[in-house]
Length: 314
Image (cartoon, rainbow, N blue to C red):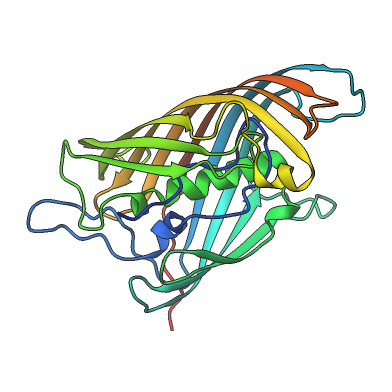
């Protein structure tokens, strides 16, 4: 079973994800094919020179209660925010490989209303990356230049666009369920967090945005579970700093994804996430403890607004 991430930046911490699981290459691997047993592979085909335009929207809320005698300690902050942007993907190169091709691509993070003609406006953030034949995301440049909100939208978009890589390689049939367990990749105060995910190929339906196409509709239910001890849940990063954390974290995620049976492209996807954390951070000797109670929620959505352009003629 191959595993991959459907989860981006943690809405509890809003810190950038530093690692990417192999699923981040879904969009860049191989053509949609209908098997003899009616199992659509749900993977798109891409060519150098193609470009795509997606919209991404989000609504975030994070409530934090802090109990501490250490006034200088800075932890997770309150947050209420509406997010919106456009993400333009450009396929630069596709090279044959096994089990998939080598891909070079770039994404531009645009304002929600599209690029501005004002020469004094801020530069457009760009992220470049390679997709290796094994599906690993490599040579990623530009992520650290994004704001936390831009990172969240980009990572959500990438995971949704790459959704098919989490599915069986021989395709799925109507009514089939697919289960996997994958680690929480966000920088959390609690170690040993994993997502139990179950994806169901629920139905075929008219595609949103492009009603002349038929979409596979996939529903994913996820539960966040804690494998670390509630008495010592310290991530390695905190242990190296002579800190100890202990507490609990829980979460639930519901997602729906529309994938075109004609093109294999994700045309629309959204997810609703709820997370809670009750955790104390202290020195290893137990002094200077800070207790956090965090409740966070988000609604995120992405949709393809412009069909992929044809590559330029040779």
